[in-house]
Image (cartoon, rainbow over all chains, first blue to last red; front, top):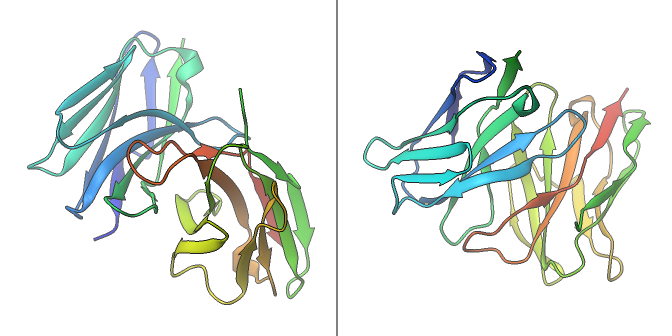
Length: 112
Length: 115
């Protein structure tokens, strides 16, 4: 019940295309859903996050869509660029706790 | 931009040896964490630390692991008797708060290889 399931594990997108990464969870106690971006040799860095009281959050080219009833959330990267090539992790944290549970990660490659 | 620094970047050790991984969190952060990432797998929570004590730990964080804040700046993870399966990238993170939009800032990691 603590798991966050993420798909796909790898994704190749043409430059300018839309990258979509999906996540699903079971634990209804989760109340904070961040996405992290990790470049090789670096630690994960917070990209964007959402709470379940909103259905969408947009920051620049990055959008989180959240479906509370389906317990699913997704990251959309519009106009994908080669510089977006990285591993993306969805994550979730239950209210009142500090532990962040990560998905397995999606390795995104944006090709010119 | 403030960052979390970790040392060493890579450590190779023999099975059964003790290892200490060091971290300097961001100076005004109050909450400190260790996560690990086994090669090709997801990032896993180990422990969180606040006010000089463990506030949460996972089932992975058994008696062979310990954490300490020996002075005002360092935060360490000790593995008493390393096993082959402890080989992983260990990430330290810190945050200002534990609730709300607590933004975890991660270090670059310490790669531990147990032979």
